Image (cartoon, rainbow, N blue to C red; front, side, top):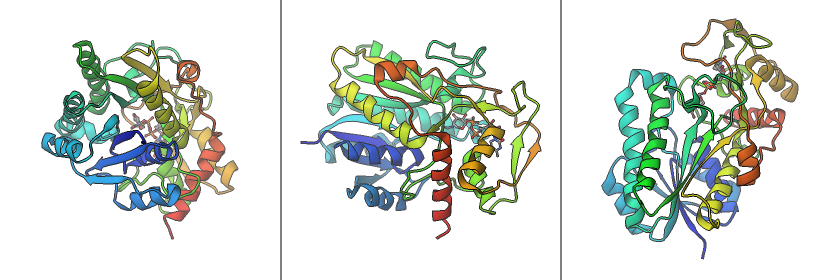
Length: 340
Ligand code: WQD
């Protein structure tokens, strides 16, 4: 009997790629998503890759009755991966209550349901944004948590604390918290990928739209930072590598012997790449020029952050493998598929 996993936000960017990897690893998947930042067609993309249609429930995790009904109608769920959250840094500054209500109520409802329905563990989608601007790079999980620079980042910090306090209160559940660095790319099949609604806020979707001529040009937000080429540095991690980390985490959490009730892992490649380096890597990988210009800094951006992934490598047994050029070629293939 396959182990059944609930994936909240499972039609989203990272969620959909994780559903594919869970199914291919033999898990049975139930998705709940309110489709506020994705669409139902993603389900077809998942099935086109795996041949398996996940159970899909359209619903909002901030509604406790919706969740209870889902658990009653889908008995035997053993683990949860929680992706369902609002995630636009800039929007969170404009609409903080929406972010606190959506991101925190979702988590609290899930945690409350777990003991009642026999769910053993929850993998939580966190972010390197909890570290703020590190004093030194690269960083491991012991790097200090700095005051959040946005309500979005604050919801990730508060969520980690909620999980910790709940488990320390004696709740019979476990958790693995995954702090993502910068997820990019798309599934090599080009059947699923990033679907930004409106003008992309993140670098790679904007870059591929500029390369495709959908946007006039990419603006590099500043080249006067204290970095080798003046542009910001990030740790860009392939979305399929990231998805695979969730499968490994779920297996460890549900089947691992003597693992702690709560564990935290940085998920990154360990390599810092600047904005200008990423543009060059895309052009090298695809042969397609990226029209771009240097603009002013974006408020709230941090200068540089990249991971020490040793804990995930050595304890989780997971390592990022996809070279950034291949990731960018997949992102381009996905962008071109959207035009068909
Ligand atoms: C990356 C770099 C920009 C757009 C945020 C969240 C993080 C996660 C990913 C949700 C920066 C530069 C960008 C553009 C640019 N969110 N840039 N021109 O800000 O590192 O991380 O998104 O999971 O939690 O904090 O990602 O892709 O927006 O920016 O020059 O048009 O690209 O200045 O240096 P970021 P990003």
